[in-house]
Image (cartoon, rainbow, N blue to C red):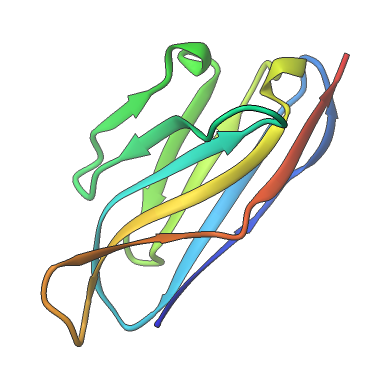
Length: 121
């Protein structure tokens, strides 16, 4: 019923920048929190950043000052601007959205398919 499509990943040198986008579509009444998570090989999925519908943000300590999360509620889209990238930022990045559906009460969590970010040293 809801699809999250990510874009913007790729290969970049250390110190470079990338911007990820994630657009939600489907039977959406509204979206509460949206966020980005990442998973490196051999590691668990970890939170990168989240943003509420009102614009309040939360960041992992490892990305504070380098990454910026934002959203466009009119487009049901969340962005992640990543600057000063480091090799340790290499991972698959996943978008997450807490969606209030049109046809069901309550909220459901949805995930994107993931987009690879590779930072070379």
